[in-house]
Length: 302
Image (cartoon, rainbow, N blue to C red; front, side, top):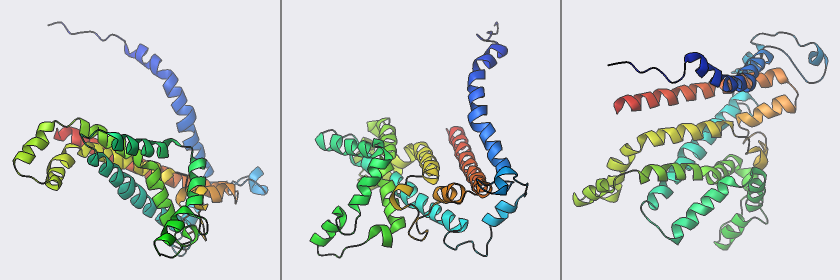
């Protein structure tokens, strides 16, 4: 049997890849190395270090991981802790859980209620950040906010959410904002399941929760992993909470992205800000590697 020759030679294939490789190098590789170099200097926007920055080695990283002040508000450790709580609460539990619940609730169902819920969830996802943030600030206002008006009508006291519960406020906000992606992903995954699976489970006497646990979850496991990794990366890097609380009050809702902005563009310490960016890149790289290794294991298991 004669061996088929490839349609394109390796040289021609590389030629087609050159434009993409050029943009990757310009917009990803070069900025990454530039940020890494800045993180090893005392570069600032003003003063002598702005004109003649000096090489300081790992001093910026040692300042970030100063464990004496690690969990003090306003330091990197506190921002990292807030980011972890923010990701767990709004992404892993909130968005993924709410998206899966909506997708499962309307699985194989049609009607006005389904279309209304899906439309509202998608609208919350596609409306511009500034508009959504303004709506939520008004919704959570202590004196004139809709939420406190509802609580007052139920005989409960008013809560100054943005002052007393700032981290919880941005967690709920981000959950409401981003649940649509998980909902759409899980709806697509559930649509691919053969109806005979659940029909056989019903004939065998399995309850809905048992069918969900033993049939649905194992069947869409790869989709769940994909969703968790993607929303974790997006949530960890999002800057939208700044529009709600600006990291306050007293740094109680300051996540890593807001901390980076404050150090680099308010205090103008580009070296320290770049060091935080390098740490964030390493965390994102670790998450991406976990994602890729998990997908490989899923592919081998099949």
